[in-house]
Length: 336
Picture 1: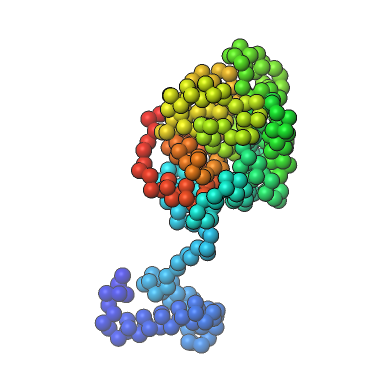
Picture 2: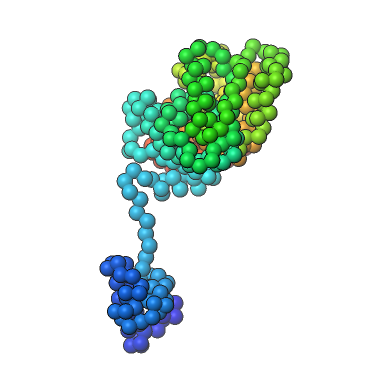
């Protein structure tokens, strides 16, 4: 700047000395601009101009120091690399040894994020066969502002009564927390044939839900590995072992709402789509905000595939998973 290039003159040196003095009085001693003006015999506008000059010259430098446990740099790096709108990284240099410890920790981290993630009037879809999401919803506090319009279950489920209660509770509780009305899928998540699925989709109760899937503004989902979770296995919606083997042969590594994908995030069907009562791939991808909560060694490949394939727009995960993802070479999915 011109002030830097002219510092050999005594006038410029004196001015720079005054700039530094004013900056120290303001930032180090905590004096108000009016007090500085009185002490130095300047106008308050003159003090303000000197402080602006201090910033322009680099005399005052603003830095942001994240407190322990906050990983903003890592979150920003992960968001930029994979074009995510939001990333929340759970603190801790080591993934907890016990999966349930990680599950609860992820749920707690997600709860804090979700308390401010939704907007008034949102139509929220929720993947109910996820213990991590259940932990998140159980840890959430009720919204203080006007809430969501509706919370919609994203996949059917009739099976083990205890598991069904868990899924219903997740939808109902999220609706209560966000101020929305719950809408349940009163049908199995996986049926025996395409004909059975089409018949159920014509039922007025199921038709209402399928129409709601097309209007969602946000979804909250888990990311599954190819091996179903214990909750899903109990639900009656788990894919049979022979179908898992067929999916694996086709390259599938994970799923969201029982919609499977390979390591690049490309959709892999294996004939299951025509038997699934749940949000479709196209409906899911149309949702503007798609928030996933997942982490840990067992799910790493599935999480990586989901973000490669643009299945999600926001991710809550653990620090070890986040670091591995940032270190991965970027690979674009050839389609979806």
